[in-house]
Length: 408
Image (cartoon, rainbow, N blue to C red; front, side, top):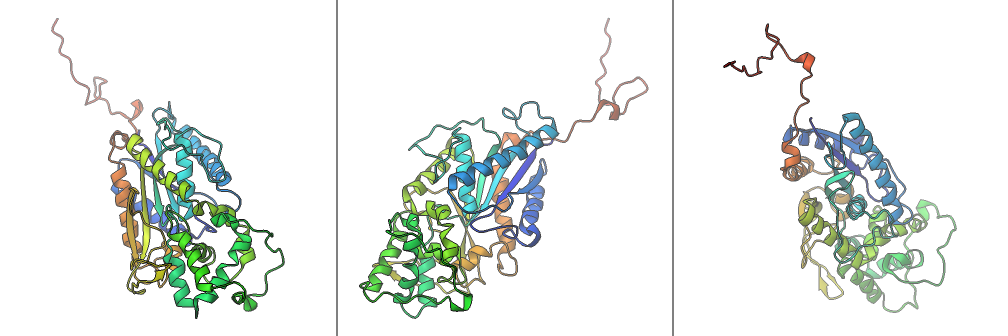
């Protein structure tokens, strides 16, 4: 029986039908390339429908898991697979962009650890959990695109502040607004609730001036950025840039309803455990994990910036990259047209905005091809011929039927 490799695409924060290109172009391109690289299997694509990136991460993961399970059940039934949990004819690769990669990772960890109940941060993870290989649906790997598994790079906000604002005090004024509506983003507590008054017209949404009684603005800015520099923590301003990249100061009321979803990026210990679980799955169950991340190229010259006494690296990326601990397979995808990290992040799958689009698709194909060099792939074959389709000789035997000599 010819088996099926299912590529399941999951969009990220505030993504939707156009995340993977106009008319889902990237999903089609990757399907075709993988089909050529792995001719022994059928390659099919499903795209998780647009979902609300509101509420806690666990609820989102739970809904996705149920949806995918139903999809694969239908495929196994249609294929007539005798035992889909023991010998599945369908294996799935979860392909997530941005926060979609975290949804994918959480779903996989929950599936392999047989934990259907999710906390607000996803699966409750032990330091070294026990995994079961008999998972359904069977996940072959998680292929992430620019997913901030270790948090958002502090350079996202640092470079943006330097390039877009006249001084750091203005940037502080904008970023400090987050403290009133997104305490969950960095664990702070606030006395009041976020304002529910309607947002002003777009033309009137100027950056608020810093408070005169607020002390040294640069110190506040540095403190905010320092959270991002901590292991796995998200930059406060980086999160804002990610949520609404066109204007850091626009639409805080819009962002406030979604902070709970991205709040998991602020919890460094959970970020570390998630990556550790993915590495453990690779070692114990041969379930793979890779993250193809964006890096700015020629259009955005590299430069060093001091933030809280720390010199940020010259390579400008959207994601924090692993340094001291193993982080799986991380591959760079250079965008020579993008001028800022958020732009490269959002336009990964748009050929006119990403000159490296073709290489991105080819690199992703090679990653998937490498993952399928296993027994499951090698034993995939074309459907056997039915008896009525087998040509017979005049003796009623197939030409391939061996002749047995009667020696009696």
